[in-house]
Amino acid sequence: MEVAATRQHAHQNTAYHCLLAYYKLGYFKQHLAHVFNKSERTLSNWIKTYEQTGVFQRAKRTSERTFSRTWLLSYYSDHPLAYLDKYQAAFTRAHHIAISKTSVWRIIHEEGLTWKVLERRAMHIKEKDVFGFVEELSYVD
Image (cartoon, rainbow, N blue to C red; front, side):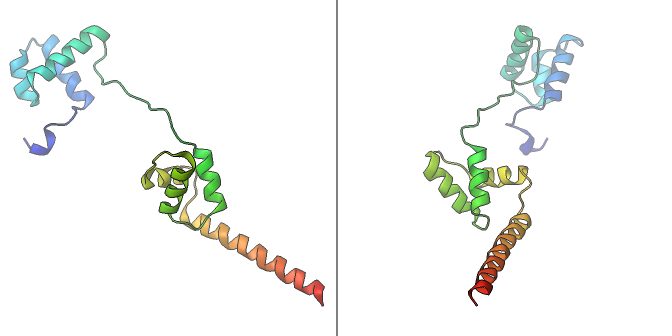
């Protein structure tokens, strides 16, 4: 067995098959610990959890979002050509909460805002400013 597969959380299928072998096939914990490359304590925890809750999967934890996605997206629309570290620093200054560049990138991409979209939007804004300026100059003469 590869070393990379040890010391990690077991997939839910592993726990399921282990519990199946324990309850239905009658294998001992020592044998299952060897077969599944897990400690007997881990198997005992799986069995205890299954007997108490009737569920063999690990609990899924959902964390509350501690930051404002809308603030970040509005800041992004106001400053379309800044880099991720600038958004990260601005968010930290505004909310006094650390956020990773990866989280900033993920939030932006979940909204469909890619770099090309933002470049086009920025070019369009600049184009409108130039046309407005040219139009103002035409009235001066």
